[in-house]
Length: 139
Image (tube, rainbow, N blue to C red; front, side, top):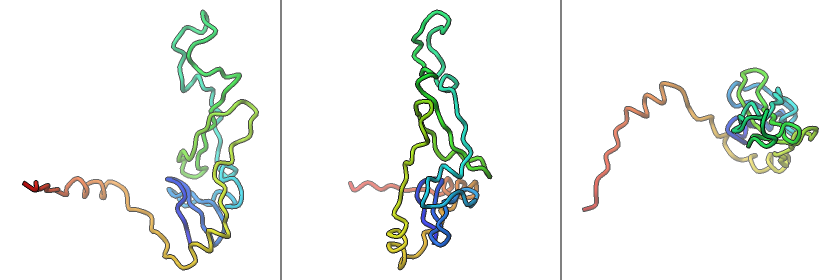
């Protein structure tokens, strides 16, 4: 049984693994932090938030100070989907932002049907655009 957790993450309750919803790659043990199975890009925050003032002239530029802040981006190692991004002080370990009770989740989903992945792609988008919605007024 696979349970959707976020836009790009799901848990396979049979194997107890985190999976990428985009490419189906198993990422990490579901009882551990999913980020352990992802590629990490440690970004200088000034790459994202460009200084508004000249750094040669001003100490404060309205851009995060790289000595106090870093941006960690987490990507699926197979398909490259960006799974998460977080702002942390340098040296801080990755946040453990999703911690689920796997045994309780298994019990909750034992008698339920698996929720299928929603269909997506250009054919679905084209079909959605071609539908005509008629709104009738109650007057």
